Length: 432
Image (tube, rainbow, N blue to C red; front, side):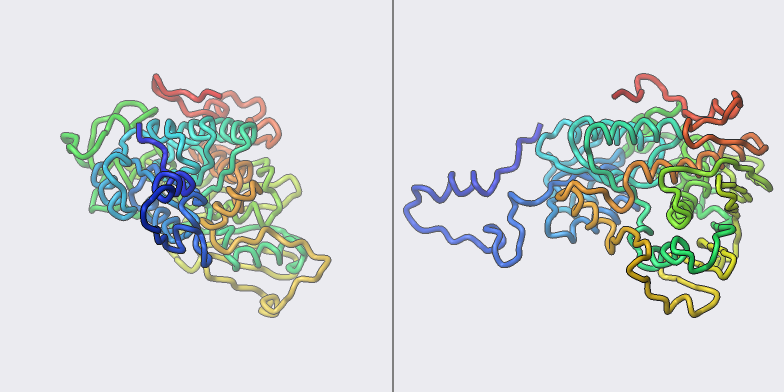
């Protein structure tokens, strides 16, 4: 196991004391001139360094308070590229995330694996006393998310979910306009998501099984999921469209957009109480069997209705809050209102102000140091993901469902409750 990094104190003791000639150290080593000394940096390991993981890695490398000390991925190509980007030696590069868990010199971990790994890895990281930045959705099922949320709170760990729109000024302003009644009484929410899979690599999902390439530990990639023949069309980015790993856009985009809906509605600690999926279309053959298009209707306890619908009209991708006196539409850098005068509103001192974060990755490090909640903390992330999961269950069963946000079950519905937890292949299991 790699040894702990030398601190500035040890460095000075071992090299400067007793030296025959004076040693000149840079201001960055000493922590002067606004720089952060190595001994004061937050050490970070990255698990899952493919597309999204590499993007997160780059963001953390730009934070002067962070020192990336290890990377882990089941694909050696991903590992090699990430290690080069972070300037790491071979001994700091891993295939098995459990080796990251065992390192005592790591403070924080970034997790950007496929969804079916999230709960197991976040649990292991929390038990080892580390904080984490985990990609969305928090977990692959409702009971996994509940387990993760409870454990992280019990262990006193910091978690930032990758629902980064909460760190966007336009998202925050839209939600503040809604929460403070500037569109009147909130009546409904419309959530538009893409209506066609963005499959990478030219795959069709009809590819035949093939030999596992030498760079991939496919057994570890599958992890807790059932065994399945290898094909390149199954792995990496395209796992999103395979229902065994993720339910398509219901979580891929829904995890982002329903999170914004929850924020604007003021339901960070709850969920809708009814859900009904309609017009659910899947490909009639092949590997990509997750819902590709759908309408999912939700009802909150206060009577507000929400619809998530798939569309190829990109102008409708986003979240529209509709009130009795106007509406607000937001997505990333876009903020539209009716009437347009809403854009000029400045909040009063008495108005509700929402959490301010202008950079999702830096906010995580801020909270690691302060021990305050992040912009997208674990319980909030769990509830937003639960909105996706109850939609998935309704789509799978082809009927409407009642849901109890307090018990996090479908009351009296044994068939639906079987979806609350995804089965895990031995020896993998969630343990506190």
